[in-house]
Amino acid sequence: MLAGAAASVVMNRYQRAISRRVAGYERAHGAQSVKAVPGAPEEDPTTAVAGAVGEAAGVPLRRREREAVGTLGHYLFGAAAGGLYAALPDGVRAAAGLPFGAAVWAGADLIALPSARLTHGPGRIPFWQHAYSLSSHLVYGVFLELGLRSLEELHEQNDHRAA
Image (tube, rainbow, N blue to C red; front, side, top):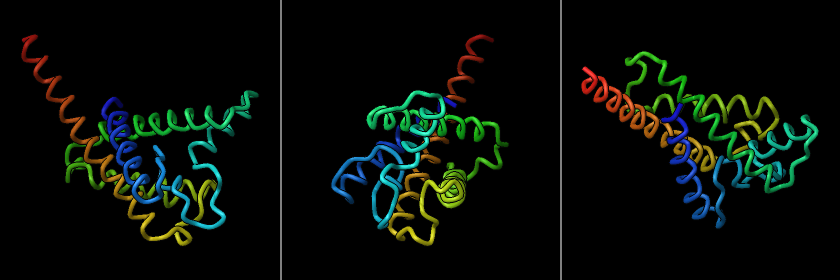
């Protein structure tokens, strides 16, 4: 989960840099936060979910609070996905985490978010925005694998020292 959270930080930094170039403003998480589709929701999905959770808990959140909680939610999702990835057999963890990053993108951006009506369906989102989102998740997958390998190496070194 630690590797997943760290990979999420790297992914968010990547998204921040890309959104600054493409849209002229920084958005820390989610290709959906770069408004490209007329009629797109005002808030990105993680911010909208944070607001809904706050409302359900009886604690309405202001915009800045929803954004902060949304970012935290994005990191928690990345950490949970990292935990799932670490549990996979080594053979599945092939290709430097790229297939896993692509699977997270497809599951979240193409299926879960549109199904929950937090974003438009895939057919209404421009190709460049899909490419941006997919590339972000590929960055996540690669850094997840690198982080996990680093943690595994550290664990092995500690085992050798203890023996």
